[in-house]
Image (cartoon, rainbow, N blue to C red; front, side, top):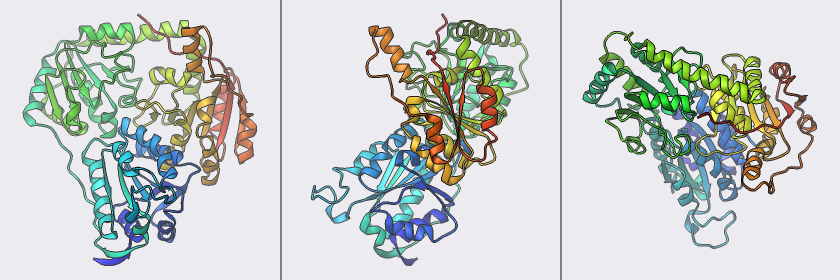
Length: 537
């Protein structure tokens, strides 16, 4: 216990909890915090150009490292600028701590005309978070930060917020710092795990469905071992891609929307779902045929049976539950070779048909993948090639696929890729985006230059919001307000001191390989018109 300011309490609490990186922009309400923050050497601060950039960079860092990421935001407009990435982190289960400033405590929510005043800033962010707390004295700050980080470890890793009024940053008070702790995660009911193991062992045609929870828990090794022990094909969700390599002989991939895999699902007699929520759009409005005998593992007990009925629901960390299943099973199963061959045939049928019907889009996916090392981290916006990538771009390693799937935010890919590079500086990182989406967060190229981040961004440029344009043309035979006046993207990059390239679909591969060897940020402008992924009955 000692006397210190609220600002010192924030900085010293973060250090005590092992936080060594924060993203943010100083503002009027946080200027007192930045004094002690910048006078220490344990925490690195990354200055961004917009609070959305801070949030997306935090998402990238958290996704590739598996550790919680921290952002700092000032009050009012600065705080609300971070709302979109907070929504993305909530939808995609990303562990993020938002330390957010607020107006003078005495005058909160009184509509008194205080600078950056919001009607109910904390209420808005409390709805975007799994948990939030306001600290009205320096002494309350360590406990709030400690509890927020605890929840990120033991609950579904959705964001938390700690809000601190401007006068509390400068106030002095008695503060007791707390030490970082290891927090136990739920391992699942032993009886349920035994039942699940028996059901999987006795199944004739089992399937495994790996969602994002398999990655956030670090369960990829256990997942592969279990699939191999059971000789069971593995499907993934969009957020679960990389939980098993796409070239693993048991991997079917993220193909449940296609007819050949839907017919496979209809024949399956047991499914094990690992950290998968079965959302509305990817499940075709919940028309995708999930086997009636469903075993579901999830860190969030409210997800068990929410979208499809379960026979066995296991509230557990995915890695711990899968290890429990491995411990409960006997030796490997070999009599499912025909079932595995059927799964491989379904995938091969889909890929051959799409390569035939969409040669441009398919060749671009092949070009990008060939140019990238196997361990490369790929961040993709929800744009036309991003939609193709979520199903068909081969992903070979865990935490190497970053995509704004749950919230679907444009402008996600570039700053998320920058955060990934900060979190994994020795790994190649690339951002894939469209021209419209890139301009949502293009100013973060200044951050990339200032931080010396060697991240190429590939812009698939059709001078339009291409996906919406396609939808309008199909629905109305007319496109409304989707055509764009774009800058010269190469000149744009060069104006920041980055390197710009122009490429065609034919030269993209060699250009991307060159960009990966550039010291510092680079941009590749590819003029191309694409279509949405095609369906296969």
